[in-house]
Each structure stands twice: as structure tokens, then as C-alpha cells.
Image (cartoon, rainbow, N blue to C red; front, side, top):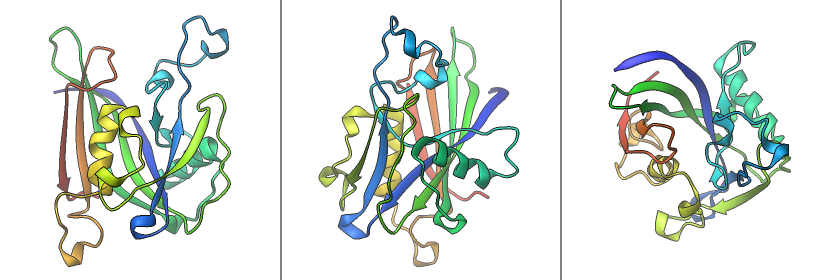
Length: 207
């Protein structure tokens, strides 16, 4: 596959609580209106997921001294949350591909997926340039009993997030909460659409 300077970054799953009382923090992007002058300054990538719920995250920046610094920076910018280093755990890697006019898919977006746990709900301060609402949703014991608005998320996000929160592959005792090291996800898009043609998920070992 043709790989040309993919954007690296992170996606952050913020949770609190235990068992059936676990909750996840999701952020809502406002709807897009081409005539809305106040939002025309937003770049194309910022408009992905408009009108839908999603998780904090973003691209790496040249000034980030290490990966964890960038993860914490994005979380602070989008939610105002400041969590200690030991609250974060890498739980997956996503590869986003786009295919134009029958060409070979090109790797364009490679975020790492992090789980960030907080023992209690903390005050959230969203960035109004990016989001217009936040909510804590109960995860529940299985997806069918979850309060997560699956139908109001980008399809590719809900495909892999459901697997991370409710693994279908039972881990061995030595692996802790997840099988292997984490979830490997490949998402394929056609042209400029945000709904994927295909989403491939597998539990894998990575570093």
C-alpha cells in the first residue's frame, strides 16, 4: 500500500467508575453549515465527525518531547482535564486509509489509542472552537445496556470502541484487562467520505 507522510496522533478514552457503574467521557461536535462564517476557519480534518459524539484526541505536534506529553496536551486542550502519567495506558493503534479513483489505499492517519482512568468525575472545560457539549455516559456490562449513543458516532469509532470496552476475545489471566497488548484497527475510506468502507479489528501484540 502506498504510504506517504501519514499524520500521527492520539485518541483518548477517558473513563471513571467500576463494573456496571463505569462511565466514559464523550465530546460533541456542532453541526456544520457552509454559510456559518464563525466556523469556516476550521480545517477539513477538524470537520470530521461534525454533529456527532466522539472522544478527545488530535495530532502530534513538533514541540511534543514524547508521546505521553502529546496525549496529555490534547486532553488538557479539549477537556481541561489534567491527569497523572500513571492514569494513561496505551490500548490500541489505528491506521486510517483513503482510496481515491481506484488507486491503492493511502495511509493518512495513525493515531495511538489511550485509556485514561480517573477515580472520580472531574470538572470538564470544553474548547468551544471544537465542541459544544460533553457528557459522561454509562458503559454498562455489555453494549446493549450501554448509554453510549452508538448511533450518533462515526461508524468506524463505534466499531472499535465497542470491542475495546466489551472485548469479544476473552483475555488470559496474565494479560490483565485486555487480550494481548491491545487492539489493532485498520479503517478504509473512499474519497473524502467519513463513513468507512471497511473496518478490520484484531487483538495484537505491539510496543
